[in-house]
Amino acid sequence: MNASTLTAPDAPQTAPEALRPARRPGTATVLRWEITKLAAQARSRYTLLGCVLGPIAIVLIFNGQQTTPSDTIYGRQIHTSGYAMPLFLLAFASQWIFPVLASLVAGDIFANEDQHGTWKTILTRSVSRSQIFWAKTVTAIMFTIAEIVVLAATTIVASMLLIGTQPLSGLSGQPLASAHALQLVIASWATALPPLIGFTTLAILLSVVTRNPSAGVAAPVVLGLVMGLLGTIGGFDLTRRFLLTTPLDSWHGLLTEPPFYGPLTFGLGVSAAWTVVCLGFAFFSLRRRDITGG
Amino acid sequence: MSEVLAVDAADLTKIYGNVTALGGISVQVAEGEVYGILGPNGAGKTTFLRMLFGLIRPDSGTLQVFGRSWESHGIGVLEGVAGFIESPKFYPGLTGRKNLELLAGLDGGTTPTRIDEVLDTVDLTERQRRKVGGYSFGMRQRLGVAASLLRDPRLLVLDEPANGLDPAGIRDMRALVKRLAASGLTVLLSSHDMGEVEHICDDVTIMRTGSVVYHGSIAALREQAPAQAHRIATTDDDAAEKLARARDLDVTRTEEGLAVRGTQDRIDSLVADIVGAGIAMRGLSLDETPLEALFFMLTEPATHTAALDGATPATSGAHQ
Figure (cartoon, each protein chain N blue to C red):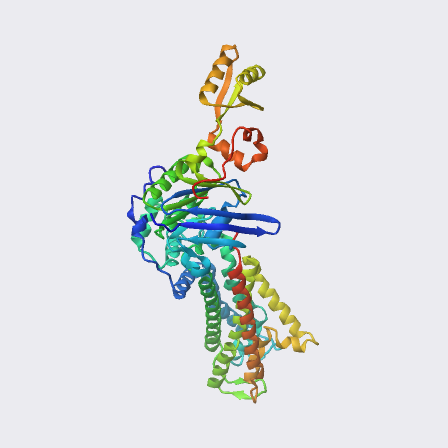
């Protein structure tokens, strides 16, 4: 500190009589604070940019190829209907891209404070741990939703523009008119949101518990892959129903004739259960924790 | 001055496994006081301050800040309280100013003018647009003070504020704390440096391994301090030691020569004797101030037993 400049507080503002009335910010204010912090991170901006550019590149590449990935769901139709490509990418992204997107911010959002030692900085202001928790949680979930919406919109628009708006064949072979196909494609992408919110809260839990950004981001992806693997192994039928990856396939029921909604509704319940359990553990873990680091 | 204590902690205990971080300490700080919490590393100072800020919870005991407790008032306890624990931490990817703006948001917001004021107070105006990741330790320390002042506190808690600062920075930090105290602010200052505390604080709690070993005024502590110690190096330390012992001075051989404890006039006489005996002086320096000596006696009794024979550490004081 330079001698010449640590002049100071003749300033009356530091005296008790000049104390301002207590101003306790609401959770909405804390949410704005967290969003401002997130927006300042280059990683979040690049991730959203990737969600825009990635699908365009993939559509261009697959559209330019002579052959089609015919052993993959809707892979056979990607050259014949612009609605097949978004469904093909939806199935592909479910395997590992979605868990990555869900955990990129959520897995880091709490552990980042541990990494920088800033818990003690923010928790010595005028906001409670609960407010911080919910602001971070809502921010992470909003970011996941934003990623999926941007990814879906870019994929659908790019496919329609580059491939076309031809009718689509349903999974039972039934023809689907263009407008109806578009509705079903949008609905199919929407079904990914509940399990991805579940993955987001799983990443939040790991972020809180491990206090390590790398673990918070990577562990949900690994768990997603393990769940995906378990889903393909025989003999785990009961377990499979409760895995967070299973609801990611529930959109199949929307494209059959007649449609079946059982997996979708059950998947909603499973996603909600994962969300509640993960958030519950994360909340109480943060609330009870001694902040000793930093 | 208000009758409500700024800090009223009673029998605070915190145990981690086999380690007793706090073993039932009590600290009372009156409003308007400049109060020191002194102790070596591991004494429990930071644990107590973290408890005050609600970062960790005590296993037992009670803690009130301006009459408010965490159990009854939650985060409301921190109204009018600001400070930092250990070295202040910020978001390294954001500028100093942006960090302050964000932190002010967590207090309900502030005006750009107020941010200008606190940045000016700690001499960071010119560096406010630089990312904190590029700040020096001292600059982050100053930004920590600025972030605290943004809350317009009645109680300012500073944990080792001079840590890592260069001598000029230490001098200026002390001056700043004194000015803040003069403005009516209650200051709770933690340090492991007796010199830092004795020049700033009115009262002090000295801690060792989670316990309070002294609690009272600096003036009372000073009265109980032993004679100051000097380091003396000569061309014939054996002869010099004999001369010291002949004067009944407390003398210890060290690698550098002799450590002699006594009043200034007795040390002066000894030096005259040494020179008069034809022994050349190679060095004479003040080893530790009396308060520092007492501090080491209180906090490191095992290595200062000889000195302890000559003084009685106090365990009572104005607030006990």
